[in-house]
Amino acid sequence: MAELTALFGNVTNLTWQMAVMWIVGGILIYLGIVKQMEPTLLVPMGFGAILVNLPMSGAITQTINGVVEEGPLDILFNAGIANELFLLLLFIGIGAMIDFTPLLACPQMMLFGAAAQFGIFFTLSLATLFGFNLQDAASVGIIGAADGPTSIFVADFFNSKYLGAIIVAAYSYMALVPIIQPPVIRMVTTKKERMIHMEYKAQDVSKTAKLLFPICITVVAGMIAPRSVSLVGFLMFGNLIRECGVLDTLSDTAQNVLANLVTLMLGLTVASQMLADAFLNLQTLAILLLGLFAFIFDTVGGVIFAKILNIFLKKKMNPMIGACGISAFPMSSRVITQMALKEDPTNIILMQAAGVNVSGQIASVIAGGLILTLIPRL
Amino acid sequence: MIENFIASLRVMGLGMLGIFAVAIVLVIIMKLLTHFFPADKKDELKG
Image (cartoon, each protein chain N blue to C red):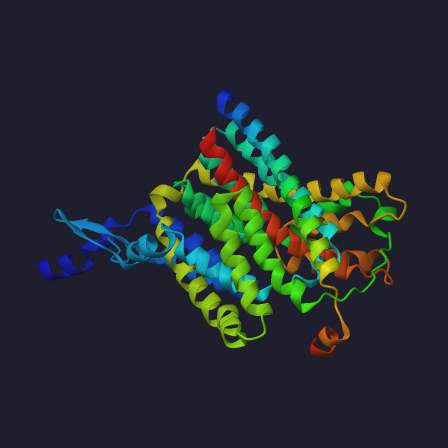
């Protein structure tokens, strides 16, 4: 009997909060597998959420009879996320995946990327009214960037205790771009505006320009927002190995093996922050709500900016392209292109949308860097 | 809370100003890059 009690005694340590986290983990796995929403991240995260919420889970650090036994997920967290290493490595992969040619062919699209970061700063202010301090508010606001790694980087930099909730919100909403953006865009545009055709002049970009681009961006971003130089630098280094033409093997490794490996580690490790005690509270609900606001106002910011520009332009722009300024690439540009085609089957704005979308990648990283620079100075 | 909110408005103003300033600098750089290093036929052939 005593042996049986010893074997199954741990069951009595199970709490209802842990069971709720199993359900949360199950939902994440369901969304990843069945709904195909960011499965590379949501499936490991969901599984990890169950793993760390088992009573006395050996996956995380536990103190047993006064002895601290380090769990592998906490070791990985300290080795890869607490020092931002995983995020930076992931940025090399992301940089290697992005083709900046549509942006170089039409540089002014960069301004839409800037405008679409409005939601970040708007939500930052809103979050302070919900009782979050400035650091946590900034970590919540950055969800609007639709850029998971930047969200983690900023939250991690500020040692936010809401890291788990922020990551869940960031990646869930990123996967929900096709559901969130269309109704918001329809709300702030007229049918006539959505039907505006945009002329696209195919402009070739030289290899030299493509090669110098990542170096120049790193130097400029580093000079203006030095805190973001590692973010921008790793992103641009990834792009340099893609464009240089002599490091195809490295580029291929960064795009596939490195990005997949880091994402796998990231998803599972992040789950160490999804302990029931820290996750199941009103702040998590507030973060999920504010994250949605951030996404909506980023979309609105980009569209309204395009509408303001249209007041002064002779050749009007389709204001929907402003919504691509969030960095969910290439999902956002695909959604906007499909919306334009739905309004008018002859209206193809894919290249303009792609240009704005890649500018959003850069702008979101710069926005993150500016926040890291501004907040500590206040 | 109000103190944080007022500080956040400052971050919003400076942040949006900063991001547009950086964006404008980047636009200028991209314009210069494509102006001084235009695509030639050799590039096109190489893809």
